[in-house]
Amino acid sequence: MINVLIFGAPGSGKGTQSARIAQTFGLEHISTGDILRKEIADQTSLGILAQDYIKEGHLVPDEDVVAMLEHHLEGKLGKVKGFIFDGFPRTIPQADALKRMLARHDCEVSIVLDLNVPEDELIRRLLERGKISGRSDDNLEAIKSRLVVYNNQTFPLKEYFRKEGTLTPINGLGEMDDIFASISEAIDSVL
Ligand code: ADP
Image 1 (cartoon, protein in one colour):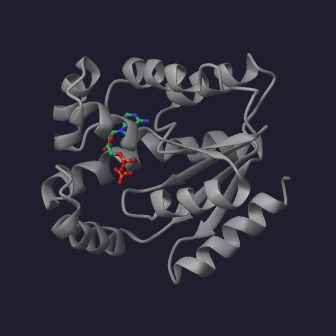
Image 2 (image 1 turned 60 degrees about the horizontal axis):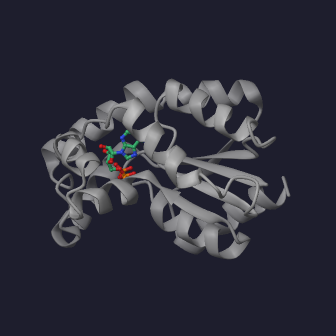
């Protein structure tokens, strides 16, 4: 199995690029943000628990997100060509949990893409998206909180994967096609 992780701050374009990666490489796209928004729309117990965290720009607790992911991977691990994990892991405990889940099926993380975009550009993109996205967290207050959470909780994961030799920096500025070309080249190199 090929398991691709994509890191990037909110607004870095990881959702858009992940959808293209899934299509081009035949991988299953797992976006924890999308799954959580669906849970909220359906007002499930997880959705009701998650909605305030999301609105405030905070992370949903690890144990809830890990259980949700386990449920989504169940029956698929080892059977599909691979996954693109978009928005997971976001904390060290989530990364440990993912590694354990993959290891149980003799799988591992193949590559970690690190999509880099300067903070002023992230804020500009998110505010622009907020005009049409209807997302509860695309407003300046929640955006600032999401960036703080990213820098404090998710940024340290880069070192974690750098040590494992899987971290691959990608310039997230410029044309979407050019960014995707760099990503494709990086994934091709581990196929
Ligand atoms: P973005 O990266 O632009 O913030 P996402 O759709 O990936 O967008 O995530 C939106 C929100 O969903 C996050 O701010 C967080 O509240 C919640 N979320 C998504 N993935 C996770 C995760 N792995 N752990 C905890 N919370 C998560």
